[in-house]
Image 1 (cartoon, rainbow, N blue to C red):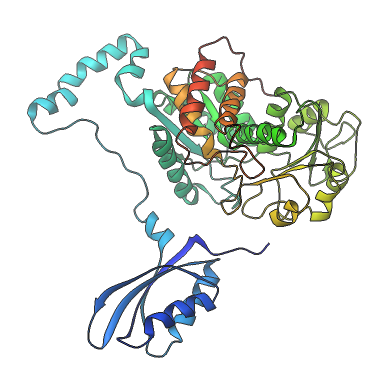
Image 2: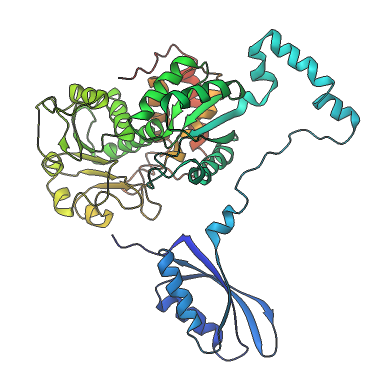
Length: 469
């Protein structure tokens, strides 16, 4: 699928051009003729003979960025001094820091924040461990834990390479919910070691956010930690995705005037995200679902079923369809993809039921071209920011953890997930709802507060525990 210039591949080129004439307009023309987009042009130094200019522009990828630089350098009289990748500049030195909440201006303040005054607080907690939630950062701190085995769409790239992503996650926690989160990148992919490590660091945190841990290992890690810890454990790749998908589907079905109990849903992807999405869709009332992986439909007759696939087979595909994804999509009302790029075509979408809903969430390249899907579907959503209806986990996890921490919850329940999805869907008002607006923007001011309030209220009731397969 062709891509367009993006700020994520934004560069700033510092160069010199002859003063006077049409040098500046030649720069803009060169960038545009190379397919880039000029977003800023700043004269940083001016003389009688030379101008020093910073040209900032967006490209499609790194090769395209280099092509733009080459085009600029080819202009007569232009001298390139420096090319800066703005994304790398943002990451220099990391994106988060620890900041003290209290002043330490004199001995009095030091004696209360640290020794000797802090000893009294420590002894109070020693007598009652629950006071740690009241008297320490525990009440507002989340550990973002990864083993680096399934980072974004990049695969098993290791803990060091995962750190920029986990830093970004921590920054989102702070920006959208005021939560202090910290990246914990583990140099092990052994389940026992991951579980034990998180168990022993848990006293310093109010919640655990598991992130980018590959399936099926992530299922066992989450299950065991939920059994061991008295703080909530939330696997965002599973449950954050599920909340956002259910919220968006709730509104999409309102647009096409269909009920979740009546529609046929075909899913592509049986990994961590697909498993969690399926569970929440069934909990919300879905009855007719077929799940496909790279081998085709999941059904009871398959001989390769592990525990999670067996659960899927037992709870979906009642008619025992054993064909491929294309056959499963035919006459379906809804397609939800959390799998691989380019596995469907516009013709496949045309074979669906009247007014179909298509969620092609593989990133950065969806399961079907959004442009092709929009020719046949009533509602299309992706994980991308350059199309309407972006389904992004940041819509869910900040508010979910804000509610969990405020309620001092010890578990995450299915009712909480359903409540979060319902609250997220309700942020879109009936007057706003339409084919191109089924899910709010990540910057909508009501998202995190609405989700947090729903989770907090659910946590105050008698919610049943979330049971894994």
